[in-house]
Image 1 (cartoon, rainbow, N blue to C red):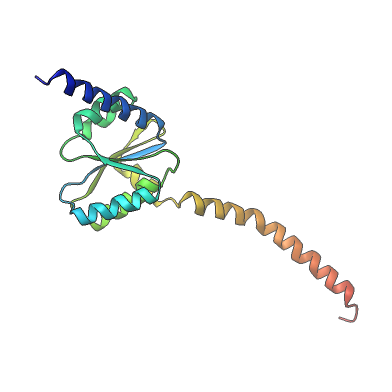
Image 2: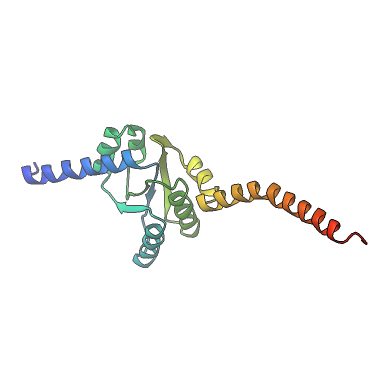
Length: 168
């Protein structure tokens, strides 16, 4: 039987993890078995630069936190080695980085994920990984908004140029 001190520490970890899960817009649960230290370090660096919190967690603690956060369906995949990547504001970063890493490393696999408080399967996480980043989407939208304005400006300039050169 664990001591009272150890039990309190575990309760604190579950409470903190529950809050992180509730605050996140998206998360991805992975099996990192067989990943080398060098590969793991590179992966952690890339995730950190993208603003994603990635850490290894015990299955029982994650299971309890997931249940308290309303993500109880996640418990079915919590076996073996487990790590979780959580993002508070970028829906695609964790999925995109982890999918790319999983494709390059056969022992690394995505177990499941969650999106806005709902557990999603591996196929959904992979679909999310294919979406462009927020910055690319914003640039695309901005380009679509600017195109008609730029065309209008060119047309007005052509009229002005034509009026200034009546010989043409």
